[in-house]
Amino acid sequence: MKRKRFQLKTLTFTILSNEANKVVTRFRLPKIIIHILFLFVIVPSTLLFYFITINSHQQQENAELSEVLNSEENKTAELQEKVDELEANRTKVQLKMEELNQLESQIKEYMTELPFDLAPSGGISITLPEDEMVENSIDEDITPDIQSKLIDQYKQTISDMETTNNKLKHIPTVWPTNSYTITSDFGIRDDPFNRSSSLHTGIDIRGKTGESVYASADGIVTLATYNGGYGNSIIVRHSNTYKTLYAHLSDIKVELGDSVKKGDHIGSIGSTGRSTGPHLHFEVIKDAEPIDPNPFLNTFDKQH
Image (cartoon, rainbow, N blue to C red; front, side, top):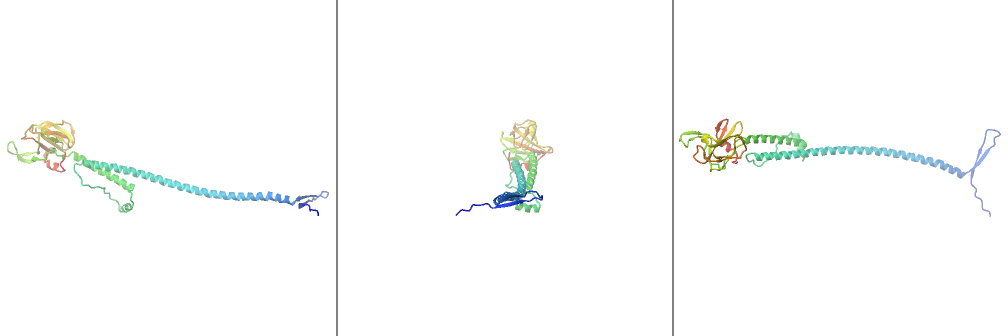
């Protein structure tokens, strides 16, 4: 039995012409060729359409991602600005705290220079509006505004203390000797030489010859020599208001025009001039008139 030969299925195409004498053209194409041609046209077109669509979606997604990225970049920039602002504020706070610490140290330094002891206490009182008090009662940190007020208050306190300290430096409040025994007070007394009543223009402080005599306040030496009945004497001008006189000295350790500080060793107790024995005659002179030194010397704790 003969095997059937495989035959390709074909399509016959006839080309007719309008002209009468024109030959009719026929050609045959296997169906598989038609299918192949169909695939070469349809498939690429389909793929092209697909890729165009995909590309459009990707472009849209890229645009959306770009917007998100820009938004995140803006947020990052805002956060960086806030961080920079916080850093700047932190730096300001640190500088103000350093200034506060310096001012506090300066206040303590002035307080140690004052000629009396203060009871242990502290704190600076600043009156604040009620709304600010409520706000800061919740916040544990001191705000820069409060720090500025503290700094202003500290500076004012330092200025006041400096003014007070400078005034006190030139007021005779330091005991002029190591001895505190007064043998003759200021005022009317019997003169030890002629037994008649007279004005004693200072106080006499008992001591031994050679014991130190100290400046009672800051000032300039305006006299440092033998001075008649006062014997070896020193006069110190402390201001336009006050002078002090130290008389009957055995030794003078300063010269005319010298600057002296409170507690400086300026001479030694003696019995020169009109004196019955070793002692210091000490006067406080206010506006050219001698006054009682006791209120000055007893204002603060005895010190040199």
